[in-house]
Image (cartoon, rainbow, N blue to C red; front, side, top):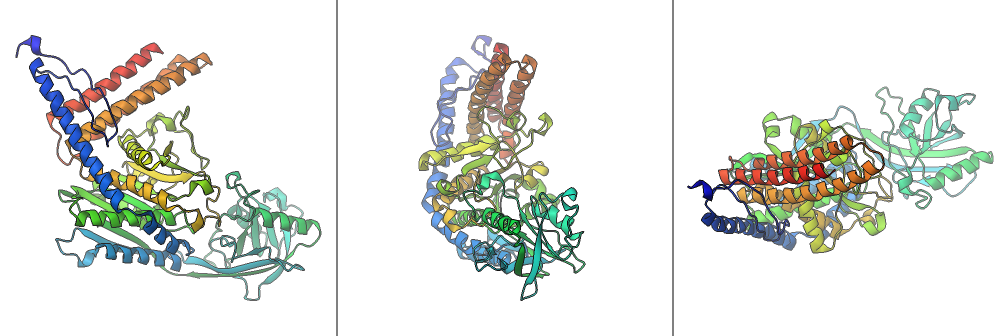
Length: 601
């Protein structure tokens, strides 16, 4: 080949990055000029083929997935006060089992080699007894209307609380402000009920060490809007004693707190308290369903949704959405639409604990986990809750420098270090697929920097890609206002669709998938680098150092360069030379654009 007909890799250019739209990718490589037209055509064919495949998954899932079915599961689960091991939790697990069997999943111990859809229930002895509330009622003596009643405030009794005698107790209430050591000075609380502001857990320890017989606390965060939702109570817990001296704790609503303070100030601070709870030995249950991969069954995509917590959105909606996704997957397998190369796993259990155990207990299984995703609070009717659907990203530079359009939720996050950044294509792929569903269904999709606190964290702890799909800020978060009427079947349908298409795409990924995602990353990198460049220009004008701002742009450049490098893990075999060149070309596009912006800064 004459040198005059040779050229170097130059660039990738885009006309579309959306997976559902065919795209034209141009790779100019060391080939004769007369061959370039053919390769441009070939590249366009590859992109078009994959675009049709992705669209095929969206089309198939949208035909099958039904938010109303997910809502039926939410209706079953949210009626039950769920703590791991208690009756409500276990009934929910067995309800999932019945639905899985109806969808065609076979108990793993009974499965034949030809049965590729299997489930199992893992049982672990619990180190401490489980707990459940039965009833409660608190009345200010001399009044007829209860201060609180379990029938209308199901979160009023703190987890691990003991029962009172059936007839209840009559005792004086002592107000201790914030419950600090100095707040107890000069106050006799032996044989009395301590009432304070802030954490019930901490107040309980302080009060019981001074002889109190029970504790009441108010501590609702501002985002729950207590002055508007005056009867809301967030669930909470007190320490569990194994010495047989367990007492009780009560959580107060804004209305109950003010009413009780008023009674104390008028000299009427005596209460009648009746509480009935159960505590008993049990097992921890985790249910796991799988569609085995045909080529690499030991490698997998894992979904996780926690069952415990008493709310409808948190997290009966995650349970219901994931169960509907499993049902749809079974339908697609049975119709021959979905033939996974790798295994697709669905897990329901105790938040973080079950997911972490799934990863840590089996080192071979852990090595095979390629992607993890948590569904937590995914069903909100945002017009009622005020929440926004969010994709919580794996740690990227926005978790180190949170600025511009990147914002933490009111749940909160702490600044991270550059060394905490986890470069991976998973962030942009999931965002892109969810935004496709958003465009299709007129559904708003937002993101937040990494914060942690749900079932995505065990994946990241194990150095696996892990994302969270959720909603925040929810004014009913962890309160007894989180009931069925706050759940939207349509939202669950949208979340379930984009989450499932992500898993179907990755567990059937081929070289076209890599090429399309490389194009997506190059486009996303340009958009991000341009936005960060503008922010850095403004920051320098306002006194920030040029060196510090260059560091931010360099971090984003490196993040996308390294994320693109990770694309080869989509395949179960080494990629072709052509695909490697495609990746290198995408990286060159990112590098050149970043360096251009760094030069301009």
